[in-house]
Image (cartoon, rainbow, N blue to C red; front, side, top):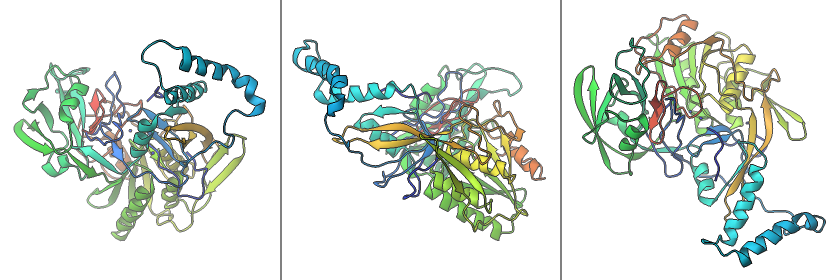
Length: 494
């Protein structure tokens, strides 16, 4: 199977909630998808992890960027599909005659080995049709790959759950790191909330020196992450340096629930920080609860962190946007015929009052449905975007399971436009306050600091907010759970 280039768009199936979409580096894995977020040769952030979710049997549409099978998803509809015209239609017999000739010749006369089965030939034909589209987001997946891509949409993760990056030991050295050692180290960007690493007390800024007694000197970040990953239920021992103090942590690799929303209070309780890692039903519900808690506590300043958010369901992007936008367009959807549908805000949002001040943190791994959310807030003047240009995913895919256990296809069926009717495909959203955090050290967060300053608060030095996993082609860290990459060479969750 060929994978589109490497990072859960609009929902065409309004009978359901909308489907999930799918980039910082974290160490976690799921049975389905290695979710290699941002595994870039030049050392960008990436995710090491796989996430699982029970597939829905209802038609769904998703706006997301999935990486693990290196998938880009911009919206999908999920539902059984059965050909309405079984066999070769009479008016197509001449066109399909050569196809059946070749099929029969291979079946009857091919003397090479191994000889493909009938199913393999049929699947190869489907794959070839999808490849003829020359669309990186439209492609065929065999049964196991298609199932795995569904599992990776969201839910749980497996591994130890920590994001790491490769960085110079001396931040002022200007050293470009490609391997550990010789002035370069692998440091923890953050433990994933609720993960085994977080429970074991791993902290942002910890430097991993060895894994299971094996020194990491001379290894690439991918090689180091491979040592940390392993089967569920097994133990990995990390030797760490924390402020020059040597410590050891033994962590059992486990399946753990990965929250879609992470919160904290900043600026002595005056600012609510809410990081959203995916756009789906759990995320919109958790966000609503987090926002309600913040407002009840009297917090009138909100930092919404969408970094590393690869997207998800359009309906849930609309729900979150409607918390701040009382009325008007959230997104336009344009189908293959050119027909455009306007999706508007839902009344009753908790923070539509302008006295609630908002900034949104974005990066090159903010994609798809997360871009729908960010674009709506920016277009309505409800929030400034702080950080780096977003990914630029403006097309929608349907995920269509095929009959006879033949897997499924991802097919581009539409595009989405911002409230200003701008198509961001390949261009992304430009931040109002651009911040280059490429060389930021683990344990610091210049983008968050800039966001706080926009709200009128001083930066919080040493803060390591949770810019979610990175899987797309923008600089980032790697989760140790499935992938690798780095800001200077970051890796993701393990």
